[in-house]
Amino acid sequence: MNVSTRNGQGQQFALTAMILTIIAIFSLLPMMRLLQEIVLPGGQFSLDAIRAGLGDRTVWLATRNTVVVGLGGTLVAVVLGVVVSIVVTLSNIRLTQTLVLCFVTPLMIAPQVTALAWLQLFGPSSALLKLLGIAPPIGTPNPLYSAGGIIALLGIQYAPLVFLIVRAGLRKLPRELIEAAQAGGAGPFRVIFTIVLPLMTPAIVGASALSFVSCVGNFGIPAFLGIPANYLVLPTLIFQRLAGGGPAVLSEVAYLSTMIGILAMAGIVLQDYISSRRDFRITTTSLPADPYDLGLWRPVVEALMWLMIVVILVLPLCGLVLTSLVRGYGIVLSADTVTLDNYRFVLFEHAAAKRAFGNSLLLSITTAVFAVLVAVPLGYVIAWGKQKWVKWLNFSVELPYALPGVVLAIASLLLFLKPLPLVGIQIYNTVWIILFAYLARFLVLAVRPTVNGYAQLDRTLEEAAEIAGAGLFTRLRTIIFPLVAPAAMAGGLLIFMTALSELTVSALLWSSGSETIGVVIFSFEQGGDSKYASALSAVIVAITFLLMLGVNLFANKLPDGVLPWRD
Image 1 (cartoon, rainbow, N blue to C red):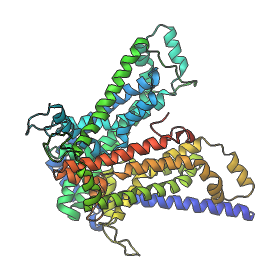
Image 2: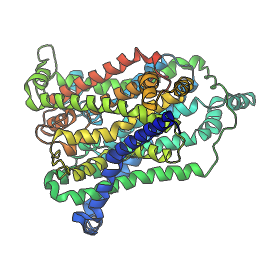
Image 3: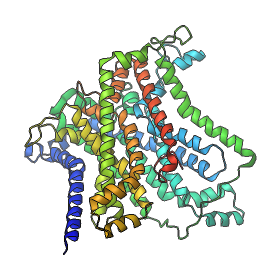
């Protein structure tokens, strides 16, 4: 064996060891610590936490509510997402890029901001309704404070997720099948119900499973809409008990978080079962199907699509912005009463809000940079690795994001409740425990587009460099990274936008001095300061939308499928 071969094997071993260490620390270790706390609290076998949970009526009520809003939100998301994907992909409506950008935007906005925007649209304090003179009387309950309100907003939040998955499947639909049906006299609706939807069953079922997992693990929407109505789901029940009991109830909330994980995994298992009952493979490949010419119906369909955008995006954001401009509760907005004092207060005067901006920027940027740097070698192994354990590596990367954020937050609490061994550093009750959870949870958002970028690369350059004697790390640095960097950095941008106003994880991990933007928004709303919560939320929405528009300028230089709102 020559020196070059030994060096190559050594670098391959070093890369594998580095990747496995990262996965062990950020994925496997937290989950193992969570399970240990449930059955081995204090190092001794005990089922007390499970018994207490099984005998707690509140836990069962919250579990039932979680299932109800999970299924209801999924149903709304699937119906809305499938309909929009079919219209956008299989018809000749115009301005589809702009329509898709607007439709996907709610997915890019934090759930608590979505909830707050909708809350400011209805109810007696709605600045928009007061401006129009149709606000209900003071004291009228907001209709969104209910299970129906939670279900509706969860559906709107995750309909874009369903849309993206189903649209990807529709692009692979064989033209021949649709043309054969059309030649046989089948109309558009008959083609959709007899050919398109049956062939899209795997995509729809997969999207439904992901939507269900997202709904049962969502904290922001049930917290804003459910807590005031005393409608608890498992994530909000965990928040309340942890806030009231502190570390003493960790075993109890560990069990509750596992319940959420079980519900989420049940949805995934059900998806696999449904998909395995029939063979949905397509034996031919061709160009995508030609879109249907809607003829005289095109303006009508376009008007309905844009009306939907107005309802699910424009009106709530208008309600949010108008509320951020009022001086106080119940004041009618006019040229004499409009003010920017709320923005000045949250941006320059409120100490916690200023700290939150700094903390969230630090967390978001650090997480994005780390994820991009790790995604390149990790994607290299996942995309081009031949080892049998690669599929398990991919599963381990997906696990922290596939499970609800509450599960990871509780696991992180348990993992860092005591100082780190050997070094004795305490990160519990600091911003660094939030950073750990973000690194674990959002890594996959950079890995997915990077793997997609690898799939579109020709390995010729890398293989030529290997033949010329370039080592693995040299090839990664000089050849691979420049080629996949656009995809990886696009994933990093998605991480930045997602983490900037994240709430589910940070709501359980924050402490005084380590507030995040999501936590401050939640605290403002819980304290009755909706005008401040709205102002801070409006700033975050503006930042998110500007980032989405900015990255569109470079979309043509990115691999296909990297940006979810781009074709």
